[in-house]
Image 1 (cartoon, rainbow, N blue to C red):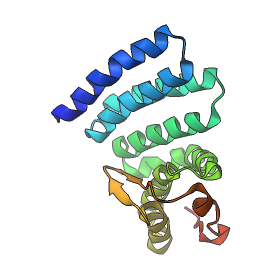
Image 2 (image 1 turned 180 degrees about the horizontal axis):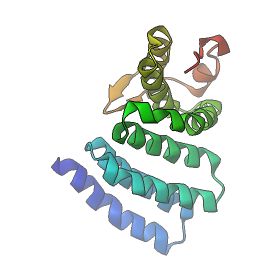
Image 3 (image 1 turned 180 degrees about the vertical axis):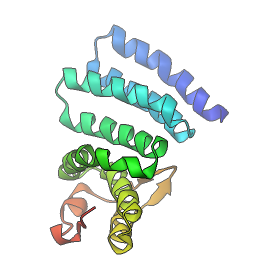
Image 4 (image 1 turned 60 degrees about the horizontal axis):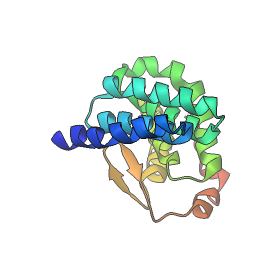
Length: 168
C-alpha cells in the first residue's frame, strides 16, 4: 500500500505547480490521477471527491472527454460503494459517459464497459454481461478494477459493429 501513498506524494507537488502556472487541464488531470491512486488502493470513498473535483476543473475548460473520464471514475467508486439494487439510478449517467468515451475511441471506454458488464450481470442477463465483459478486457490485460490495453488502436475500437453493443 505504500506505493499508492508514494505516488500521491509525487503527484501533489506537480499539482501545486500546475495550479501556480494556471494550467487547468494539467491540474484536472493530476487531481484525477491523485484520486485514481486511492481507487487502485481499494479506497473508493477517498477517491470519489478527487474525481468530483476533476469534473469541476474540466467543466471550467469545457473538456468533454476528460469530464467523461472522471465521471467513469466516479461511477466506478459508486458501483463499489453502493449495494447493487441501488445501481439503477446510475444508468443514465453510465449511458451518457459510455457514449462519450466510446465516441472518442479511447481505451478508457473499458471503464464503462466493465461497469455495464457488472450492471447487466446483476440484472441476470448473463449472456449480455459476458459480451460487455469480453469487450472490456480483450485484447488487453486487466489492471486493478479497470481493463487497460495499450495495443488496441482507436480505429480498431471505432470499427466494432454496433450490433456488438448489448443492452444493459
